[in-house]
Amino acid sequence: MKKLYFFLLAMILPVAIWAQAPSAYSLRIQNQTPWPQQCVIFGGEVCGPCASTYTSATIMVAPMTTLSYGNSTTLGGTYPPSIPKGIVGAKILNGPAVCSPGGGTVGQPPCGLPTTYGYVTILPGCSPAGPTKAIWVPATNCQSTAQLIFQP
Image 1 (cartoon, helix red, strand yellow):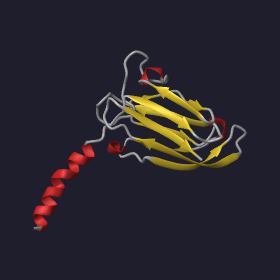
Image 2 (cartoon, one colour):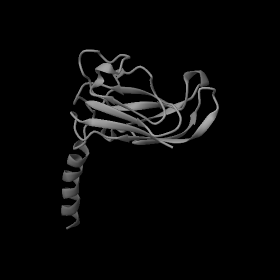
Image 3 (cartoon, helix red, strand yellow):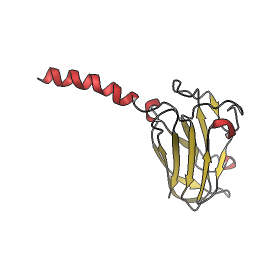
Image 4 (cartoon, one colour):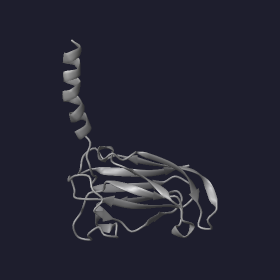
């Protein structure tokens, strides 16, 4: 009986893992904190394997603001402006580049990326603001929307 149980588990587990998409088609970013947040989005081909072939320009999200990207063509950086590509994750910057902020990464779980990253936000004057959590809500398929949420 144990062998049958493990056999069934071994057959079902890969299906559950692959049920999530390796990339998203669109992205919604919500900053629920009272501080500005920064990130760089990365990805590869839509519905393709996990990749970081393309990177966006640094995105600055004002406090209490929501940004929506219907596809990757408006992300800037190395993302092509005319052909939508997949969105895999985000590099979270703890603060402005002049402060040497460091940071973490969140993204699609099938790509081995964590869905949360906790840090202290650094303000433009390089002083600490407060604890922040970046949360990635994965896309359910490669034609759907992922979300990046910044919470205090």
